[in-house]
Length: 127
Image (cartoon, rainbow, N blue to C red; front, side):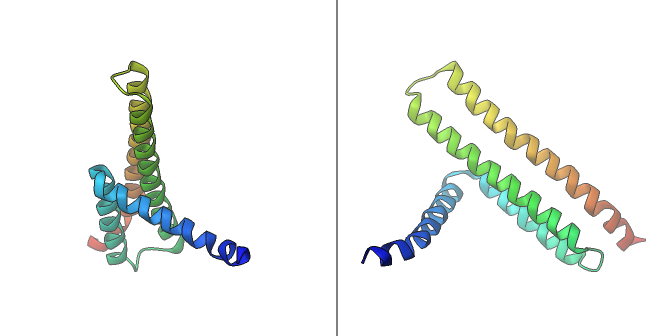
């Protein structure tokens, strides 16, 4: 019986992860915005499929994953700080602001990477 529990334990972990993802999507507007923008970027890449190469696809998917992952980490940090700091606390605010700044830096970086990849391809389509 113990072997059977261990055999399926990894499957439960995926369930917990998906539950966390769905909870975050339900509660965090910014995560939904990042996810929708990620889907739009993938649609644009698909429309430009003739100009896209495997490296472009890998970079785009990696950047989308990093931004969404950072948004999830930011959400987790903010929730943890809310649990620990029962009332306003300057250090708690700093932690939340720094966590949000990390997400912002990765988001701006991803936009720059996207522009570097897409602008030449869009120019080529319209030339």
